[in-house]
Image 1: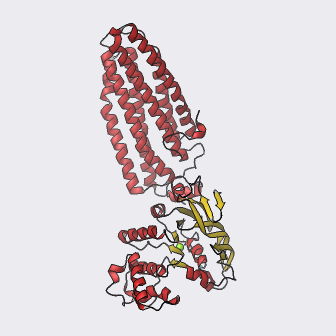
Image 2: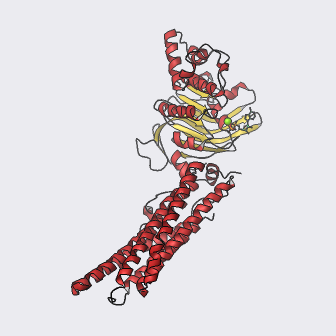
Image 3: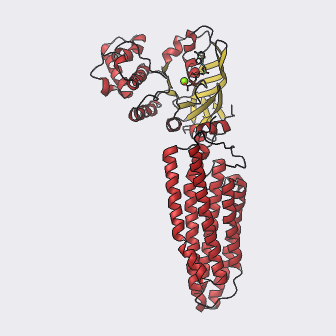
Length: 279
Length: 235
Ligand SMILES: Nc1ncnc2c1ncn2[C@@H]1O[C@H](COP(=O)(O)OP(=O)(O)OP(=O)(O)O)[C@@H](O)[C@H]1O
Ligand SMILES: [Mg+2]
């Protein structure tokens, strides 16, 4: 893990060299990951990961297949709790209230309500398109049909899916193509307007136009949300994120402002990876 | 590709053809550099030896240099589009575009010198040239060394070239005064002195481009400032 300049001032973290106040690189910390390790039963998948997640910024996570990116994201909503034998060490502190997400004392519903997630493989519920998007709202107790309608449409529009499904909202989500299902899952995650949005390769199954829509959406969303995105597309990471973390074999090798990481990485391993010189 | 200084070591790409493309681009820059280096050397020789044939040859080579610049730029653009290079690769390709431009400008100055030589040798010599050949030697060595630094990705050597620019500027300033004195002494010599003054100016500009290339080499290696040496190395 590289040293990063981290000048603290309350919640503000200034990342990278000589960041001007007010620049993209001066941001408040939304989440602090501190010494996070994770074990699938006896197999350790994350090793002592420490990194800040900047508020209202996009943080990209990159790294070779199997390096632990999805495992890392799944820690944020305590997905791993669903299987016995899985174990966390370290902390994931959610600001401003300072809740430690992975503490056994924390009710896993708290992060699940505050953090939205889109998985690598689309996983719509076996329900209608409409109900998939409305699900998260219903959990939060919203019953008003007009409000549900409004929020469902808004979310589907944001996920660049509305035009394709507006005439068949009652059709099964399984009738959609893979790329459409992925956008449906994005709409579902957006609907309850979570504080943090975690996206695990959200565009890997999408065509270039839908990808462009999603990238534009992410850029728009960062005015209000904190976003973490896993992507295998280096150009995408470079385009849409302000900060990037590079993982390798369960460790965070380098973290820094995206532009610096892609033009002059500090670590040889990062350079080898992003320039296509790996193994 | 060899690496020196504090830059990160470089391994081969997983996609071999990408390595080949980068190597080819580098070779083309080196080829263009060698051509331009020779043009400058011959322009100076033409001046000192009052050799019209050599001067004419320098002028003719202009097209070849222009073609090489075009080829390099096309290739760099194609690599940007097809490989979307990152980090060291991106810096190399982007700087190939800039360095080819510096070399093309350098070639233009050599051609300019050669054209003035063609005119100068129609008249009897002013007096034996001393300062201009010395200045020319310095500039020529700068080009040679900066191309060497490019091939080796040697930021230290590039910095050394960069530092020499000040000396070139001093030569130019003293030549300027010297030639001005001649003009005042014998106004009939004005046009000849102005030709010599422009030759000195062209040499000074060639030195500037060698300095520019030195800055690009530093950026390729270290990735910080593109158009100047970072402040901590300022003389
Ligand atoms: N449920 C599980 N049980 C045991 N090991 C697992 C489990 N899920 C993942 N792993 C292992 O943990 C490591 C990290 O996997 P993870 O899915 O986090 O990688 P990733 O970086 O997301 O890869 P990809 O880019 O291919 O999605 C891998 O070695 C993987 O085999
Ligand atoms: Mg994954």
